[in-house]
Amino acid sequence: MPPRPRPAKLKYPKPTGEGSLGTARKYAIRLGEERGWTVYMHRQVHKALGRVLTGLPDGQRVSHTTLRETLTGTNLPMRRTAEVLAALDLLIEDRTPAAREWIERRVGELPDGFQRDVRNWLLWLLDGDARTRPRALGTLHSYFGAVRPVLERWAETHSQLREITHGEVTHAITGLRGSKYTILVTALRSLFRHAKRHGRVFTNPMRGIRVGRRPPGPVMPMSDNEIAHARTTAATPEARLAIALAAVHAARGETIRALQLEDVDFPRNRITLDGTVQPMGALTRATLRTWLAERQARWPHTLNRHVLVSRQTANDTGPISPYFLKRQLTVHGVSLDRVRADRVLGEALATGADPLHLTAIFDLSETTAVKYAALARQLLHDLPGHGQNPRTEHAPTPANSPEFPPKELRKS
Image 1: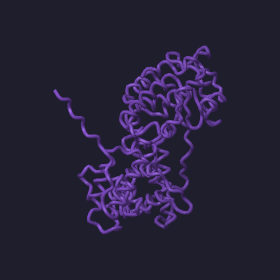
Image 2 (image 1 turned 60 degrees about the horizontal axis):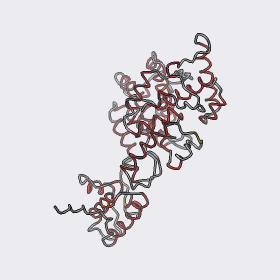
Image 3 (image 1 turned 45 degrees about the vertical axis):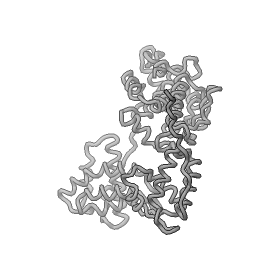
């Protein structure tokens, strides 16, 4: 039998076309080489530019709305195509920002008499002013989610915000505890302060109501069930790596997302996190090797230097989004902050609650290190015998011990 012919190797498309189309295709090839696009991505962007620019006069700009209408349903890359057009000043940005769309949609669900005040308040939070810095969209989500049910109850007996009294505000917050109380009071103070400043209410019904300083909840060692749940939930190589970095090195989420290939030194068995060089434990080394092999198999041509990449960032140079880790872990009930806090507390319990040691190992602030050390001393003092470690079943081992990392963390 004659040997099967090998499939033709994909080649980069030639930047054909005249005028703006040819210029855009040439630029797309250069941009793709800088970003590490696959050959497939090059070809798809090449096709998309042809669909959008063919037949247009040289130099004519395209609105983002037209771009979306042209490429919808074609499976061609809209975002990469928009990047090329924008870089050449061929794109008219006519989209409504997603945050403003969210505000209009949510405010439209409120009773009519409250819509204007809440809309102006949310836009003020989003944009800020000369005296107020803009707030993150997550803050808007949190504030609106807290005040919405209260506003809907008030709307049953009132037609606008200026009719709300101090007594009604007090009634709305009565019985709330913890974070629910804090978020609602903070949001209402912000809403009525904005309304008073712009003459929408005669008096501020929040006068005299303080948020108060709620002491943080105690950090306790993770239970066996929590550890088992984290181990089960981390089902992908990237999730296991994130858990390992938090569990062994007490790395924060933003530190994990920012980790670059240059920060990993296998020959010297070291890893650099937030500028601090740490020895690489067995779990870290194993999960890194597993993930990097997976990364190479999925995106062999990516030029992104971040250790963790996704389908979106493999064709770019930036880090993964916070939502990437949230989708992998948080939505399934695993908190990286909880794992990280457990690691720091475990180190404190295993090394005599020395804040200087915690600062040196995990690059903590003095205040944070003292807090963990004090908590560790309290836990040790509260136990019978005053010397027994409260994590006897899975006691942590100091970072400078040959048994580092803890045994239960090596099971992946």
